[in-house]
Image: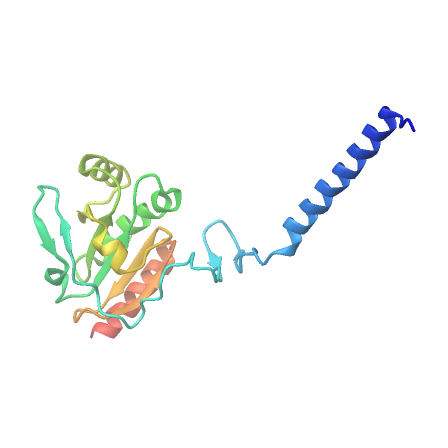
Length: 196
């Protein structure tokens, strides 16, 4: 019995195409790979994925006691930051949201710098790149390198930027992602109230 090869080939290709489409539909809809997040605008995320891709919630925790590096290569213990209200911002130059918010931090520092200590922590950039990038955005408060990611790991950082609002005793009372100048002022005022 002789089978027509063109018809067999066409039938096989049709079955293969149907299988590929069916597998694509199953892969696209069959898993629980959806993020529980919704962008409300370009600056705010509501909800986080429940698969370990969010930053740890640090509110109420003590500020981790770790060692950072200053611009001259000296070790600085985070314990030395305590004693006054702190705003600790984790950022790096290749992070677009970080770049967008740094001018707001410079503005808030100019307004609240005599009442609150501002600390910038950078886990990625060289000292030169960190200082140049921050300076171009008006930042002139303290900047430190997290060379061995001790601080970044201690706070469970996954997404950047991260800002911690810390009482003089070292208790983290608020943690944010991207923040604008108005919300930054609100958080700082709450920090000052909690620190009084």
